[in-house]
Length: 444
Image (tube, rainbow, N blue to C red; front, side, top):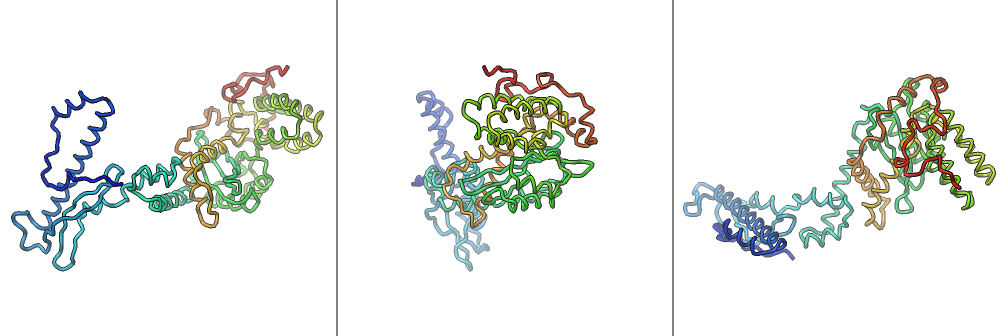
């Protein structure tokens, strides 16, 4: 229930505590009691200040109480109970009334502003974006705002964010890398996300598309919109596209950006292979995949891939065939002869999966998605922008000049660059960066 406030009834309240009394109250009480005293004092001060603002507005309209303005069409009409929002809570106050000779009741501008829930807008939508349920907001605000009002505010804000994400300019940056991955939401809906990385290592969510799966239709809508907004790949400046194993994404990229180089996500590939192996073989498979991800350059990458393929072929022919089918796209980054420090970022779509994992935490209170409207798109846009606000540049972004040079150079330039041995650690990512042990670890 909203709290009853009587401090604003009188224009000259006498409840102000002087400095000495306040100091004594702090010394006598504990930390919690002192905080409560200070909070009550601040609220009382705000209420008194608000009463004075309303009284000044009445004086401007009607003249002083003791000398009414005879030329003004306004006159005082007593007072009545009203409500305002102070500190996010609803306060019951007594407000002065003013009437107009020809138009009846005149609402004070100060009271109208203080009694509007618009002042709670940013605070409310921020709390919803952080994962608080709309019903929980209604309870914590002690009835200051209803669940339906929270819902209306959130719809308005998230719709604004959807427009912001899809209408902002993305053609002003040179995108070296484009990551595309699909993530399922709620078990029945899929969101395909495109994330760009520029030459300075800065990440930005470019766009997304929702559907029931990573179908060619869903991917086509996304890539078509990206192309119209200025995301390009040419012979002179080809892009590196890092994607999951979806055939629809592969076909879509070939259609819209035929010059782009495609790198399949090694993490997705490893999971698919592991599902076909016996449990006792998975540990060695993980070690070999780890060596492959740590390898630097064309020669070391192909050596590590061949070691992995031979191990898989001895244990599962179907898994070896699936691995061989992905050979070219699995070795794209290695064949560019880049420093292995970039492998952490360029060999997987983990950047997108981390974004969506964090977003799922914020949408955990959503039990049912209304796919008939724009609910999924609104929430996805809000979640992606929220995640983007915490983006940092990729690890070892200073090495991206090597990627830029390799993409712009002739395709044969990879053969002329020196290749590191598989076992070399000259610039390989550390075990801490990969979250794993070194590829030199003996499995036995």
